[in-house]
Image 1 (cartoon, rainbow, N blue to C red):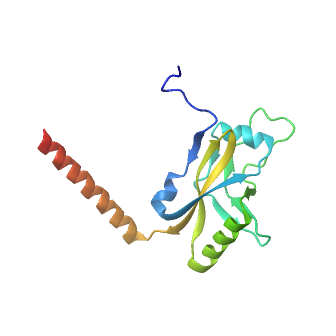
Image 2 (cartoon, rainbow, N blue to C red):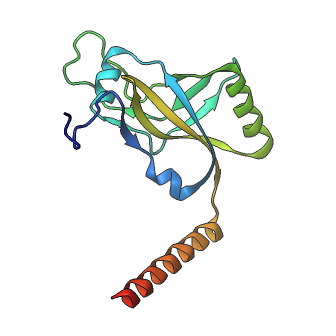
Image 3 (cartoon, one colour):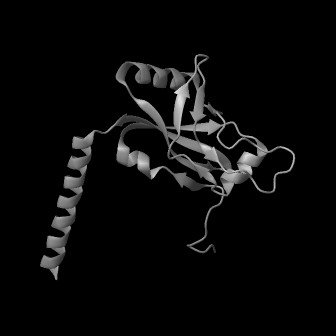
Length: 160
């Protein structure tokens, strides 16, 4: 019998980009793989990656590249150390890449990494097709959250 609090190390979220949800409206999510070197894999498995300022670019060759993502150097790496902020190639199907490229060019979307996670022992990145929020959108979202909070407080007081 397994314990209910046991962590599944082959399937877990390593890093989540919470700032992206506040700054952008996420239209669509997509899962991609990433090309890494050995010391990067060890470092990412230890959750030593920052994607808060990262974004994805579609190159002229039709490849996805992750830019400005910081992967901390692995302390125990000896021969093959990696550059912390290097450009990393993302792995996706051709149809998905062309679909993303068309939306980026036509509608002014941007592609942001939303979270980094393990799926069956492999490192995956969840990309979000996002559109930036302006000040009015953010204020409206805050108003909605406050009204929900107030109604919950009223209902809770009424039920007691």
